[in-house]
Image (tube, rainbow, N blue to C red; front, side):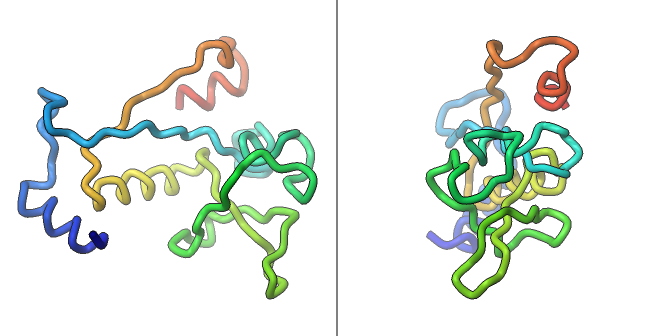
Length: 137
């Protein structure tokens, strides 16, 4: 089903999920844990690079797939140390960018996803750290 088909189906159903039940809902987990150097979170290349404090470039990769960046605005793109075949610098997104997170949730809504579960990994959160502040924002 295309995004427009899903949007039409969602609109015909009212577009807003009933928050009183999970019955009949399509739910997902959302891992907003991708950060980039210079995104303001000061957490380096978290979840993009194997060594987050080193350049995200060949030899320092933690991801299996590259994100589709075609719909991202210029202010949502972060340059990496990778190049496309045509010579353009490959770019990724940051979950520290509010505009990007809002975009992700809009996409979920457009595709008929009713909600996202909040996840916390307590072993990675120490009060007062940059990571704790980022995950609580």
